[in-house]
Length: 142
Image 1 (cartoon, one colour):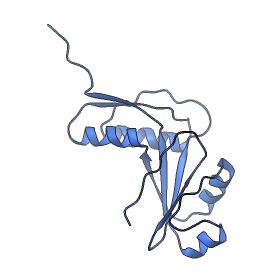
Image 2 (image 1 turned 180 degrees about the vertical axis):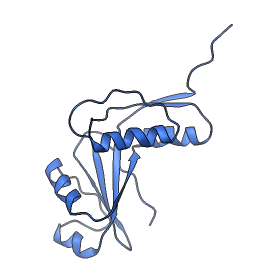
Image 3 (image 1 turned 90 degrees about the horizontal axis):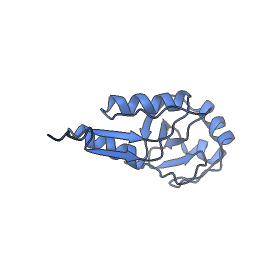
C-alpha cells in the first residue's frame, strides 16, 4: 500500500511583502521617483518612506508564494519554503500564506524581511523594494 504525497506542489522562493498605499504626484516628485517605474532603494530609504506613508495594506507576494496561494485556492495541497525574518513583515507574510491555505513551516530567522513599497497614484503606480538579490515585483492593475 502506498502513501499519498502530503502535498501536490512544494514551492521554494523569495518571501516578499508588498506594502500598498495611495499617494499623489507631488510625493513622487519630492522623493525624486519616476511615475510608472520601479526604483531600487536601500533599507534606510525604505524605512524612511514607510513611516511617512498614510494608510497602507500589506500583502504577501513573490512569484512562487503567489503560485502556491493560487494552487491552494483551487483545492491543491500546497507548501512553501522561503526565508522570513522575525519582524512585522515576516509575521504578516506567514499569516497570509497560512490564511490562503498554504503550509509554511520554515522557521523565522534574523531581524528584518524583504518588503516592497507601492505608492499608487490615480493613473499609475510606482514600486520599490529593499535591495535583495533575485526578487521580482508584483504589478498592480491600473
